[in-house]
Image 1: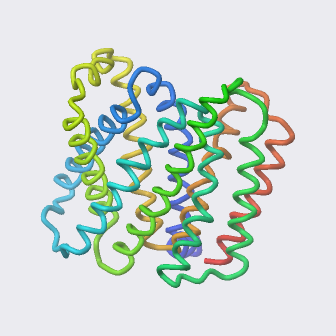
Image 2 (image 1 turned 90 degrees about the vertical axis):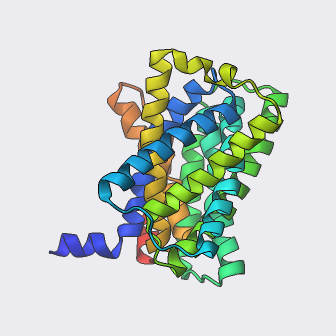
Length: 304
């Protein structure tokens, strides 16, 4: 009974952590697929796949045609355009330029940006312990991902391009999160439908952008002719986009935007036990960084 009460009271926080875990799995997969497909092409493909997953879920659950206000629909479509069409495309470009480890480092900018925007525009005030929690979580994750391993040397051009697109991605992500948070907390819309609307907004804009710029869709879809590439992208989409964004929207409905974003940004910490289980050496620095971030997570739970 106590365990059920704990889950109910902190379901938003648990959803954010589970989303981070799933994103840690999918980020590496997307980085591999991204070498064969353009950032916008990959974003479009995973968007279409995820929408199909959600439509199937809605049909199976029998939750067709809910009563949703047009204002809510508009907020979520705009959230998808900014956070997914622009933000995710910028993030995939960052992955290609900087590699998954440094790209994840750029993601640590999102929690403080989100918390600040929520404070300015939504008057969402977090207790001091929650702010300390955000800072500790960001510092811990940053210390883990800045360790010199894995991604190799990045040229100055790629570095500048990666940093620019990384900053753009995090600004878009923070704005998208705030818009979703408003829609989810001020209406009765479910996280399932909010995720579908966000994905639809982002995917439609990507499709129109490619159409206007006369992109060759056959060329974009050609890598999917490889069964392995198709399955890899399908798996990453199921874990990171279908389940991950659904859980993120659940977190935004049941906890503060800054807290949800901070917990969602702990993806690099989940990579450590996965790496250790595969035989990779986990350094003392990585362990200490994880402990700092975990201390931040504890403070975030206390501040909820």
